[in-house]
Amino acid sequence: MPFSDRLLMGPGPSNPYPEVTAAFTRPLLGHLDGEFIALLDETCDRLRAVFRTDNALTFPISGTGSAGMEAAFVNTVGEGDTVVVGVNGVFGKRMCDVAARCGATVVPVHERWGLPIDPQRLLDAHPNPTVIAVVHAETSTGIRNDIVELGAAKGDALLLVDCVTSLAGIDLRLDEWGIDIAYSGTQKCLGAPPGLAPLSVSPRALERLLKEPRSWYFDLQMLANYVTGNVARAYHHTAPIAMVFALHAGLGVVLDEGLEATQARHQHCGDLLQAGLLERGYDLIAPSANRLPQLTSVRVPESRLPNGYTEAEVRAELLNRYSIEIGGGLGDLAGVCWRIGCMGHSARTRNVTMLLGALDELLL
Image 1 (cartoon, helix red, strand yellow):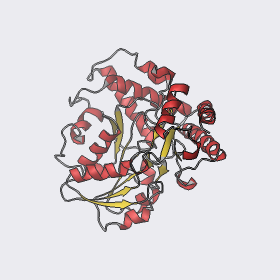
Image 2 (cartoon, helix red, strand yellow):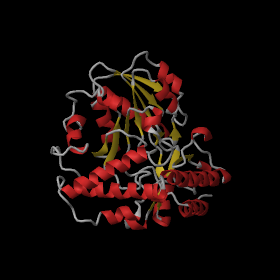
Image 3 (cartoon, helix red, strand yellow):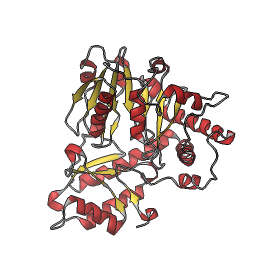
Image 4 (cartoon, helix red, strand yellow):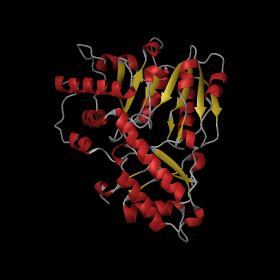
């Protein structure tokens, strides 16, 4: 089935904005070409606007969201450091893994998947951690974890936040909330394909970067010589030119629409979808107070599956018959829930209506 015929409403890539697709038709430039450098600088400015930050070191890491995660940890966490990590889904667990590979003593704060983490539990988990890390929008469960309280009471710790699914989809304010390190992905609410990980580092965190992190490719001090506007750009690696074109275009769509308007569109579509599911008797995983609008986790309605169908076969039927792709559960929720995305260009009322109509036709 051609990609263009599919409606991507899963937890992974969203349908790209048309402007993003057009950006891929631009002739390629060299990664040290002056025209590309100017476009990269503008992309970084646009990222600052969407992250709501003045951080000078704000740029797209070459790699997907997990590359942003690794860059954030390897540059700030060393052997013997203590890292407190909130774990209420797959990506909190991944944070623990990455921090441990940096040699850290990891203090996980667990919460049942589908529930938000109490910020005070993170603050009380250790008297003097190097880093407090949490996922803002947990893609595996559809939960929003509260950040403001952490920034206000973090003390000497650096606050590291996974914003992969939250950036441009819900309210996020790096400077105002005291977030020291944030990373995201391009394929969610920014409406671009996967391949880059927007990253932002506060001046406070810059002062604590390790002199020799356990990664050459993600060494932020080396990368800063290429991306922070120095007159003579130091070659580090060959930047993915076409992906930067696409990110530049996606950010342009968000800022032209208006960041608040983009977030309101995501909220409207999420509200419409969740109301439609509840009206049909489906059970949503996340409690309403911390439920993401852009990623809805719904419990698989076992009693309403067609005779002989598994939940995976129903998702395949959605794709094959209606060209609608939704995601299955991960980790503790594998086989238990479906994850439905309304992100980026896919966050449209007509798409919600199409999905609800398809479910009405397919399920008992």
